Image 1 (spheres, rainbow, N blue to C red):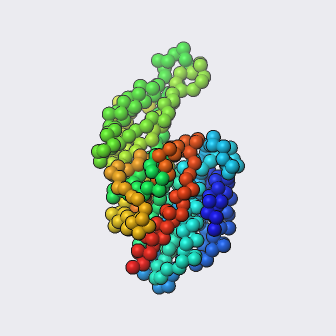
Image 2: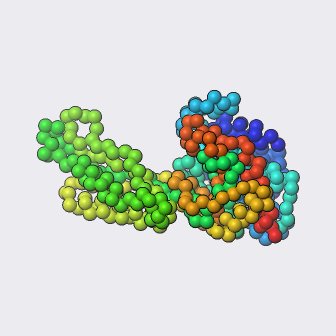
Image 3: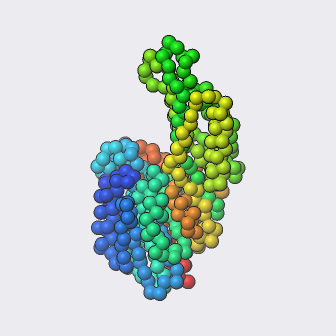
Length: 375
């Protein structure tokens, strides 16, 4: 199996979240050349669940890879550059998918005993909808899954270095739209309007007071202002509507939830003092923190040692969200990182490119985890 060629082909056919039709077909073509027990398409999505059943299964282990790309342009002059100039694999999901395909190859040619292995090729990670679609489909309920594992490539760390965390590997993140509605008037008579500007400014200030930007603290909470927009380009009409958009993040799910509740309560208190202003709050793109199970982290460490691969424990979570966190809310498991080089461009950067050299070693770590779970 030429896994590098497979990764490059996946890179060429990059598709945004929810549109991974050709990616799914390509993965199926790769898997059809291998020995599997069963391949199922996940209802209402472009996901796949691949089963390997070896003998009388005492345990069921799940491994997940995300398959979607970003709506963004890459500037690298690659021979295998994306066919769509507006969509690119700038987060390395083509690499994650290739790792899982190579794991399928290892399982096909090196069968094990008394274990069931599930390979989840999950769509729509970037918009936070993919893991939820998998859970809601009910496909995982067919199995009594003991553990779940996933990886993410990490730029700015030594190539091949395995990064472990006993706590949260990635942060809990949610985006929020706050729509404030007052009343317009003729621009010549602003006294007859109810402008949302003042309460929006107060909202911004109270959110800033609730932040805890010290990332070393367990109650870390960061609120990133995405948009502050009032009124419209209609010069004869005073502003009567406005929108605030934020992304909130914390290291712990309960901290994020409590802060969001506190913000909403305080805004409603402000609104009660101003007659004629209403608020609509929408939460979207929720990513749960990947709260690692320590036993699963130890399994990763043991597998890494067996493969004689360098590893390192890190204290803090990565600040970005990753929707594998929803799966670890349902199934005990762990996510770990693999460095792709100190000189690698950051995730989501237009110059980012995945490192092919980590595909086989990472797949072998997955395989060692399964071997250890068989014992």
